[in-house]
Image (cartoon, rainbow, N blue to C red; front, side, top):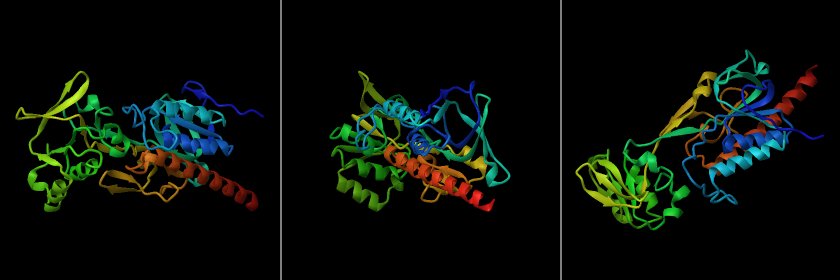
Length: 325
């Protein structure tokens, strides 16, 4: 028997699924792949807003190093299609749970439809709020970057700048010194008095220059970063600038379901067990929906783990129901 896959819009089909995956990035697609291969009726709701859209390439994923995020996701969608997983281009705007675990969940979509599921995978990720310095948003993902493991090799040995927006930016400056010996920390909104003696000793040991004063804008010529301009008018030549976006976890649906969240230095994320199960029975969180540090390869792994766990849990639940009859 040949199984089919439907990629549809919200104007066509709606129904009841064993699992609805909310979010079509690496984590969500990975969970869907495992569930599809387990012959579970699965739907992926994809709003089409992956976190790594600004990046031309993704790095550090074995066998996929250098692939564009768009190509990676296209391949993932094609893979889940082979196993009968449905994908809807829409946004989940509300979710409710039944009075007991057997009643499952109802997911309302922006297009007006409602789908139902026995289990949910929340893979809604997070959004990066960039520092409001002119030029940063325009160049983010090119020569304005945030993760040395993602982009450090590509800009190695260039003149780095690090835009300090919190005292933790010192750590970022120390980290990126692994990829270049020409690093300048622009204190921007951080006062010199906020740097500890240990900070200063480590910065000096790493050869990182420290420049006080607020950054006014980035200097750009021929569509490339050439410098960082301060409010006093001075410009410091730089070729790459590391920034620290403020991560905003997309936990709205989890909050609606009553999932317990815990505060971290990078925002509030759901409390989960090693498989991604939240404090709400039947609801898993994967990828950046469960933590700040989930790179693409980690997100895919988390999705796989959640998918396998959900399949096993559904199997045992159904067998136990037969035994009780």
